[in-house]
Image (cartoon, rainbow, N blue to C red; front, side, top):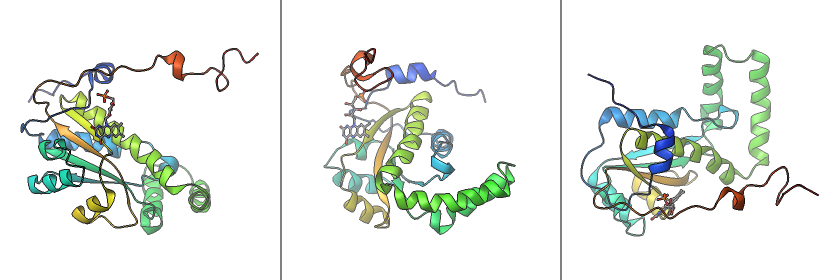
Length: 216
Ligand SMILES: Cc1cc2nc3c(=O)[nH]c(=O)nc-3n(C[C@H](O)[C@H](O)[C@H](O)COP(=O)(O)O)c2cc1C
């Protein structure tokens, strides 16, 4: 079978809109695998990979998820919803050692550098704002999945408008785990949202120093 042509990343970033309504056309299994892999391949601090993704395809569950998302119908319409989570305890429950085992298998690092990570990482976790740290990591994986879905010809909607407590109960997510964002994936039905525009780079980019023109 001929390999599916992916859109260029530049096209994806130019054309992507937050999809207002999804039709029933399914997401192919092989494409979903590729989308998920794009998330799994993301970079993270110390390669800790503290993300967990709950892939929801069951229509009844998606309807309930929509209720937990302030009734946003898109969550029920989209054939796939990926609930992206961050687990603050994953490193302690085996992920740190598993990450180092894989690194060793890959020939990455030395015993000394791995021991350095064993010593430093728990200290990092004590010193950071864990929620902000998790959001930082999870949203990169989330974005990679969103862009891969678009590259494969799907439409997406990123969502933060949900009640995390209700989502946790619905999907059996432990209380200690942060529900970071949801990604609806499917095909646009009806007309797309208009492009709302963006600030120019002059408005948001400083050179060398905050607020900075020449720094004089
Ligand atoms: C993290 C994140 C969460 C969002 N949550 C919602 C949401 O709950 N409901 C919604 O209608 N749009 C949501 N959006 C979509 C934004 O409103 C949208 O990205 C923005 O207006 C720019 O439009 P565009 O994505 O079509 O370019 C979210 C976007 C992001 C990045």
